[in-house]
Amino acid sequence: MNKQELIEKYKKLEGVWNAEGAELARQIFLQDLEQLDKPKPVKVPQCVAEYIEFKKKNNFHVYGAMRVIEDHYDKKVPEWFYENNIEKFCLAWLDGYEVEKEKRYFVKIKGNIKENMLVYGELLKRYFFTKSFSLDDVIYSHTRKELEDANFGWVFDCPGIEIEEVEYDTNGEMPISKNLDDFWNCYKKNRKTEEKQDEYKNEFGRKGSTCNGTTAESCLEEAYEVIKDRKGKMIDGVFVKEEYYGE
Image (tube, rainbow, N blue to C red; front, side, top):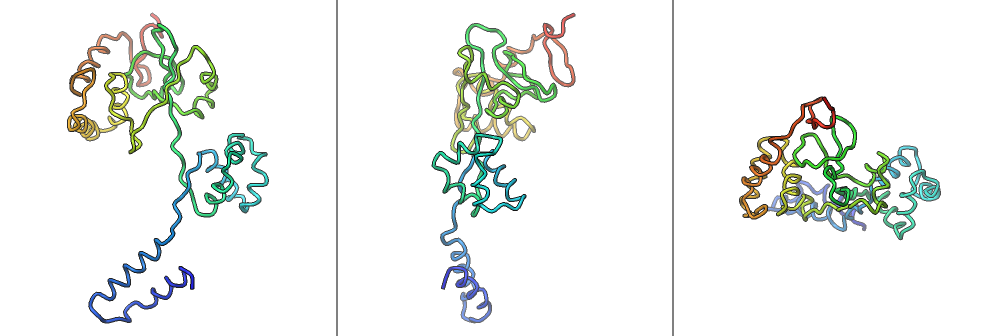
């Protein structure tokens, strides 16, 4: 008798026993049976997940999908597959998967450059360099795929560019930093609502974290002092420096 047959057997026994606690015990036993040897989903890159879903949608079986994988247009898929991941691919196809969190990077120009941080303006819908860490609707960290799709893949091989991987804690969130710039990035992630802002500031206070030797509130005040005298104007909801649009 296999596990599924045992599950079906005990499902049919509902109401058979009248003894006190018997029905509760049956339900608990069923729950334990259903969890028995339940495979944990393997983790695969986003590109592999997309490949699997595309092939399934087009009625491929797992063997057929593996046979043609090296012809796939995105060469990162066959490269991953042949790096000892054949078994993982099969498990992902048969038992499901989780998509790996893509690494994110800060991209900076090396040297004493004023506008040195590569950012993406969500409203402007383009990349540009800035020195400010207080712009709204701007993304400061990027995945490799995002950069490559925007023709910025060259930054990973350029000696004049500094690439810094964004670090995450065990909960997948950016860690609290003692550096004002990193602090501002952390804070911007959590400022979608006032509730989130308060929750995040309370978390800083609860952990007794500091920024440049000061409290979280002082960090915000310091950030304000840095940006309050900027000259420019709002264009399509984004602050643009005066030097960018001229007179």
